[in-house]
Picture 1 (tube, one colour):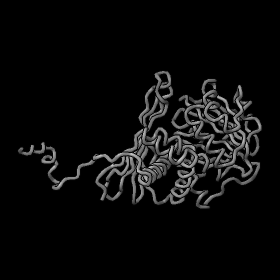
Picture 2 (cartoon, rainbow, N blue to C red; picture 1 turned 60 degrees about the vertical axis):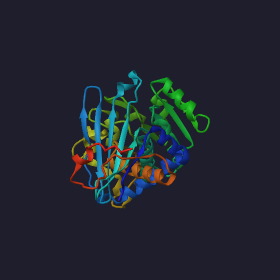
Picture 3 (spheres, one colour; picture 1 turned 45 degrees about the vertical axis):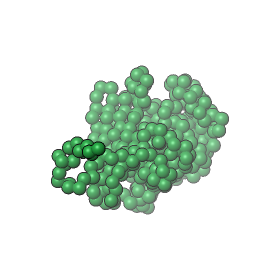
Picture 4 (spheres, rainbow, N blue to C red; picture 1 turned 90 degrees about the vertical axis):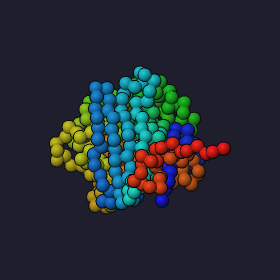
Length: 345
């Protein structure tokens, strides 16, 4: 029986990732995702709970199986950048289902970027063309490096065309990865996406935007749309969806928050687990356009948290917290609160 909770704060997460490496962390989470999505029916699932305001959203994302329960607290506040704060910040927990004991309390701002990259890679492995070598990265903010590293090292993408409306974001991406990966800056979305195999969109504005227009999308492309993740926030021209095969994480949530939120209630989508389980087809031809309408789902956090917990225990990283009471008489919580008598000297 556990008596403490492993705590991974930001410094501890940085040490953990320094030990295993960003790419290996994405790979490990990707492997967990494939395993967890492959046992889809083992999980109790629900759309996330979201509290919206005029400037952003705060969400709780739970999921569980017979062994573990996890949740993530995450926000999305595009204007935070004006205050010197991250647009997306998160923390989460992994607990024993049978006792409710929290095994892990962890930062998840970094972990969310890792698991989002891992999910993007998994989806592309499942439904993009197998000969993909080029990608456009539209939106060069906080998550872009993780996406670029994942696609380059795990999917073999050799050339990545990048664009952001903020030139400083593109400069930052070039500074961080330009010496190790072939990154090609562009002055517009249209220029960046022309002729590529994969388009990844990762923008932050909470509005019904059209980042990628229908005319920009060519036969056989795969679109990894990860920026549209709440009601009233999109990135793609709706006409693109009409001529594509669309894949989602969890349809009840995606129909409210994803690119498909303005499509008919019976708009056809395929959930990723169905492809992994061979219950439905992925890509059906080289010419087909595929879209991964990603909004982020609690099972992805579950996969990421159990990866972090395993690595933290194996590597001895993090500290143990006395977060929950372990007392002799479990009915005497009040007595447990009383001061310990001082010893006579």
